[in-house]
Image (cartoon, rainbow, N blue to C red; front, side, top):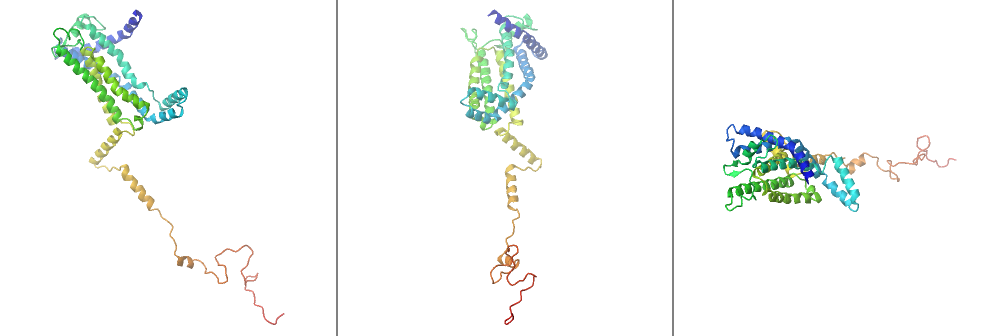
Length: 357
């Protein structure tokens, strides 16, 4: 157990220095026009820390978006593989991973931003949890840590208190802490739900809403908010503030991506095309939509030149009239056969005279 604790300290110690340096820098800035001992300056420092971390995670977020989009687009192929190799799990797993590799996607890439934020989250949690006792971490000295841990947001809500803390539920319950913590927990839960909901309803093709992947997304839609809500009541106000700010950033960032760079074949893409057409019309540009192009193609196909039919009279004038003897002059004769009444020289055959031998 002690070895596990030492390993945790080994991982978190560099984060203590990074987090404390960023927070102290923001606190010094906000102290120029706010009370340095007040909780508002520290609360804004936590928000500034969140913004800096999320800016650093933007490349990973872009990778997450691309991976999620590729996962959505190849879902029909994944369903076909399951139908084809459903009896052989090993072969199905091999073919599925090969499909992921060919598509340039990774099913675990969408978890990277959350996984990288977890150590930061735990470092901030321990920093806040031990700050009230004056425990120094990183660049946070004992005096500064105590000032941070005992500061009050809005002048009456300690930044290090939790919803389930003993002094919150003591003989005289601190309703202010309960109310602020409850509002932050609900905001954190709501932003998580809205973020997942807008991804499924606007930026997923119809084919991706079927199968096992869609079921997993629907499960996360309801499980994650509940899990965050139940766990949030045990976190300090400062940690809830960090988490809620991070969720708001994720929701806004995803809204921007869905609006400006939606996945093909999704409702978000249809909405973007409609906005682009309306914008082009306002600028006076000519816009040809797909429904307008189809009738033009059909009309061109309908005006194709057809061979003209000849009347019976025209056909008779263009060919010799048939002889009364039988065969028509237009009919072909076998090679070497002469018409009747014609001699080999080409002239007519003389008529037989009576009485001549």
